Length: 224
Image 1 (tube, rainbow, N blue to C red):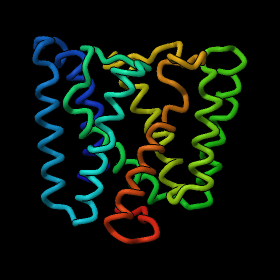
Image 2 (cartoon, helix red, strand yellow):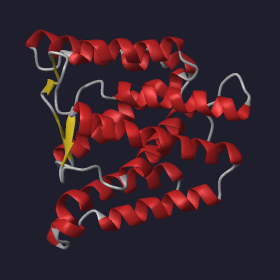
Image 3 (cartoon, rainbow, N blue to C red):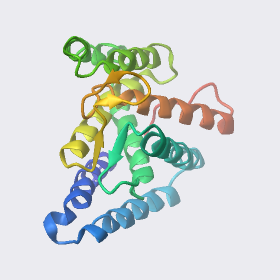
């Protein structure tokens, strides 16, 4: 099975099992544990069979995603998890989504990066005009900026869509819920925010910068 499908099935089935306890087969207290074990087991398998560069990426994604998640959910409180605290599988899931976005990006032409983001524009305008998601205006500017000036434009465009798909699934299953009023900002957001991918793009940029430090290269290529 192609790695992309492993990621898609892991994310989709894992979120469903965690949210529903496999449709009631597991008690709420144990619902996350099969997902924790599977995700970290899969992460370990990929790590042990990866190149040095990929191993650095994997560790870096987890090292960056974990404190970001804790800050966003426990300090800033822009979203809240189903059982209050971040599930253990989340940091590993961040790497799966990152690598999935990279696989998608590898199949894109560089010239598609900006056009791929254009469908967001009328939706952002609608959210701003109706007042339902005013934060999307600022997040769109960030995503466009990352895509225009960042080292991996295809990855940022791919992540904008991949992250939104995953977030829609997670919020529909109620694994987490985004705040309609963004704390400290006076802005509003849909559940999930339309341009939630901006946070993932920022994380990907930090990963790229960290790997560059270890690899000594101008930038890390999108590759699978």
